Length: 455
Image 1 (tube, rainbow, N blue to C red):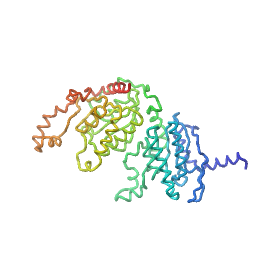
Image 2: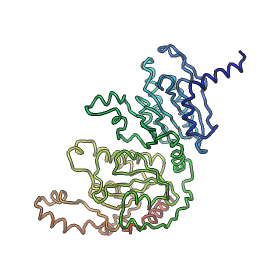
Image 3: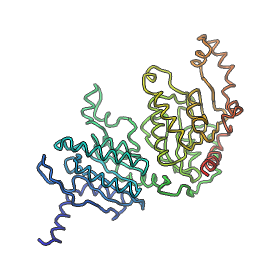
């Protein structure tokens, strides 16, 4: 067999072993754009007694609607996608190239863990991958697509990514869901696999759905597109429906350019919505508290969701618009017995580093004001809806502590007496609020403020 025929034979063997993972990748990247490197990386696996074509990992670079990406694909057809030291070395080389070129990384993950026959050597490789991935967080976006179950150390890699797509019923877990479900009576494999732990950025039914979202994300992150783009949406568009109903959906509809908002981590903590989009063409992050008339009580999960998102916003140098409706820390034993106060300070530190426009549309009570509204913690501009409540305390619980009485009639009188003190106009008089606005004009005020803080 001559050298050309030998090369063709080797390519055919490799393509056969990696056919399925290449097919999955082709659903996301542009046709003909994928260029593989380290193609003929073969290693002898002494424990399993076999050669491993491609080392169970396919790496290279490609484009997604013209956006360049480096690619790491685990091949579940080789030892179930289990990581080996050689796998990790190959991944590390790809991540180094991505960091040097400042190009996003796209991972297709499908792994049962590590190849246990390699012993501690594979753990050293895993540590190198996680270190490089962590170093990339402030440099380039990392996008993970869980095409099947992602278990063990690879799950930690997925969690470290900026965006994690979970396809269908795929499970991303640091331990086998079978083991986890067995650890607690009444739990099932599915309930563990679908745990609302904040890891999942997007849920999709098929890999084909990922491409559009990846393009939308990269089109919004100004490192890879213009910071301000013409979206065709009117800067002066009014939203009279906000005067009647300031729901989370209406706030997004009224403020962000049409169809531009991308919600992230939807399944984690439903009463706080986070995401990115464009406002007046400006790439902007959004944090919107729900809770309607009750407001949002700060629990550990709420604080962690905002803290982690603020870190992402900082890494990607985006301004943020924060819609506030908060009662402060939740007053119950379960919340008190969590590290919520420590994480609250970490959250405040992350928020303080952002360019921020704050809009109080509901409540800002106690720490709900200090944490999210105060200029001491980084609000560049503060607006409040007419009818919003800003005060030290709210309701009978606060009154009973402040005035040392539990008499219902007395508390009712006190609540009525201090109701006017909660009016946002009082905060404006003190210089704590820049302007009290009609809700329907929110978009105009936010665009104006964004233009000022970014110039």
